[in-house]
Length: 199
Ligand SMILES: Nc1nc2c(c(=O)[nH]1)N(C=O)[C@@H](CNc1ccc(C(=O)N[C@@H](CCC(=O)O)C(=O)O)cc1)CN2
Ligand SMILES: Nc1ncnc2c1ncn2[C@@H]1O[C@H](COP(=O)(O)OP(=O)(O)OP(=O)(O)O)[C@@H](O)[C@H]1O
Image (tube, rainbow, N blue to C red; front, top):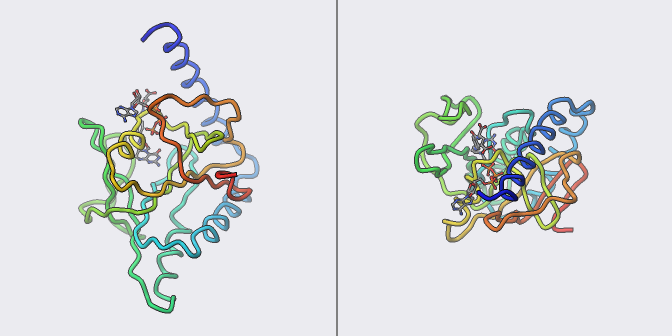
């Protein structure tokens, strides 16, 4: 790394730390969570997907699973009942890859290599839509994550690519974030105010 790369890495680290700190102490978190759940549920109406990937929330992330569980149950009520599936990421720390495994409420879980709970011994599924946790997000659909590059690497390798939807709070918006060449923009971003990307 040269000096400016090193500076950029330092800046990103400091920015992550600041955003994570802020997210853990959101004074109006419960209202924001309720609003974002509603935004998600409305956004999902009319989407053709039957297999959706999400995440098990950590470090104050918004929990997407209650809204997705409702979406799954709603699949039984539509005119032609659909079997809908929810998946959670399972990372391979050695190869730095990520796959999705079926999850349902009450599913047995175990910790992955980073200490994040993952479904225990359930089938691998292929989501056509992915909800992605954002530490921060920026104009153009760019996302700041935890620095593992798992989504960027996975999206670069998948064909067809799943539709990717970032989830964050209004407070996580980064108007001046500069993406790097490997950053893959998200297809949409939802926050507690509604759909904020595409504008
Ligand atoms: N809830 C949730 N699950 C998720 C993700 C996520 O963003 N949220 N991921 C989304 O990708 C994957 C895990 N991503 C991870 C990314 C980085 C590190 C990690 O250990 N990072 C180092 C710092 C690296 C650096 O700063 O260079 C660390 O925390 O020490 C762990 C997991 C899959 N599961
Ligand atoms: N397509 C790719 N192929 C190989 N390495 C990649 C690719 N995309 C990203 N990386 C590497 O992954 C590392 C982390 O990238 P970045 O800082 O953008 O992560 P992030 O998106 O914030 O984190 P995450 O997605 O894990 O939450 C970088 O060092 C980058 O070089």
